[in-house]
Image (cartoon, rainbow, N blue to C red; front, side, top):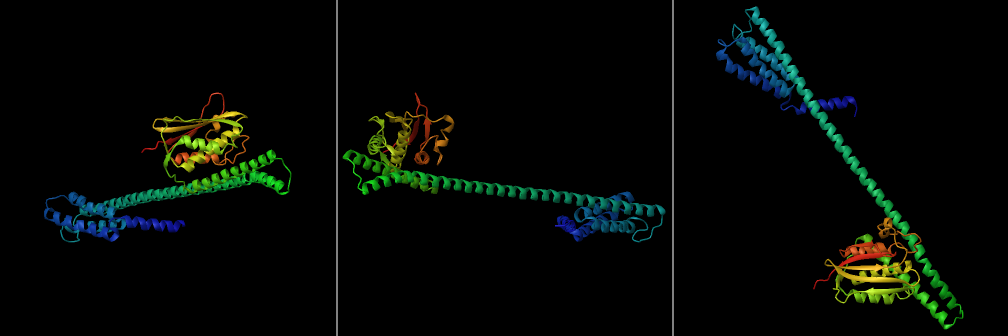
Length: 385
């Protein structure tokens, strides 16, 4: 918008903000003159000319305020004519008999027009100032909206970048973690299919290896499916009463091949109440924690699984004797696809554990241990009959 059009727009806005506009200002001014003349004419013989003149200045000021400069000029001219006709002798005529009256009329006309002009200019400046303030507020609001839009676009960009990072990490995880057990299974089955001769112990060991890798694939696929449910927001635990001692014993027995190089100790008091949890999801949490402990435990290390009731909750701890986790990395390990130094895991097991535990209304963290190792501690609600 150019300067000319903006000036024209400002004039339109200023004119529209006057309460009555130019015609209304003229009517208001002349109306006040009529009222004042009607009131003062009966007393014109006893009142001074100065009093009448001051009274007739008031309509000029009012016309200037409500209508602007042109109504002020029209009202001023009308007020001067009214003063000459009705308040300067000889009355009711346009004839002046004395020089003093002519001078008074000229002074009144100059004063009335000057006052009206000044009031109108001040009114226009005030309206222009209000309009300028509104323009500044409008520009500020537009700038604020633009800034909010930029922030929203930046947030969407970060979200898209995060999705891209997750997708890339997922592809890396799948390509590596699925290929490794598949290569082992393919190698063993190829040898057996080719008719390679093995004694019974070696053959049983190879078959156990195939079983271990198949179970590893099954755990990885289960974690990937759970991750997709978590990302989609569809993870909803089906709560039931779960006896933790039976769950722990069952998991340790099913993971006997994974835990064959460690000693597992399960410590669950017989007075422990039942947990309010989803059995399948809780089974996945214990499986991931035991698998994580087995991968980081030394040969013949001890893995402890303990459960206690504390403050109306059930606290479960899984402790290993591995290298432990540095304090600065304890929050990061629960992020998807985050791997510790030297780790060969997919990087999603602990993230799934946190999501499942939090879906149950509990918390999970890494506690301190005596003598090294890592301790994962999470809480579950108690089943209320």
